Amino acid sequence: MNLIVVTAKNWAIGKDNDLLFSLPEDMKYFRQVSRGKTVVMGRKTLESFPGAKPLPNRRNLVLTRNSAYEKEGAAICHSEEELLSRLADTPEEEILIIGGGEIYARFLDRCHLAYVTRVETPVPDADQFFPDLSLRQEWKLLSQSEEKEQNGHRFRFCIYENQNPAQWKTLDKR
Figure (tube, one colour):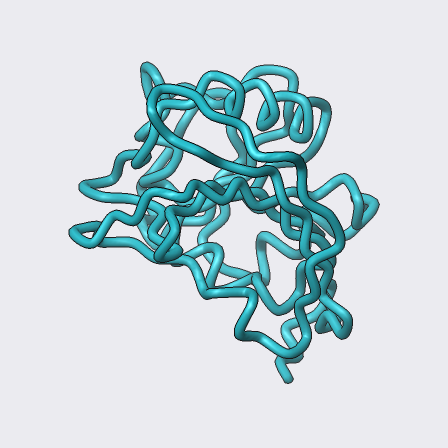
């Protein structure tokens, strides 16, 4: 199980259920990393997509507490147990957590790799944040791209590795 996220310099990831930056190169990177994968997200993340439609060329799984929620083109799960059951036969490297903040928090410790687009712009008024991986002993920076600039923002594509991921196919937590 892996994850992908865009963070501001202060590890902010969202405000008012929206992304903080418009970076076409990052969207291209997201499509490249996620195409053909099983993507796991929360309901609010799905509803933030254009037309609130599931992502094409991916298997979309949505975790929500809303028992009446339905969305054509997405498998809706109402508990971690149900989600993990649906993922049981999916190879670990084919699962990608894509947000939002609550979903990242629930599955971060089970992820092996984190594809993090690090934008050098801080966003102090954000309302969603991602844990600072540089402060977590188990996460190590594997690689980072050269600095890029787009729409007035400098950023890098970074890959972090969890040196000790929790067992993802069970609800056991460390």
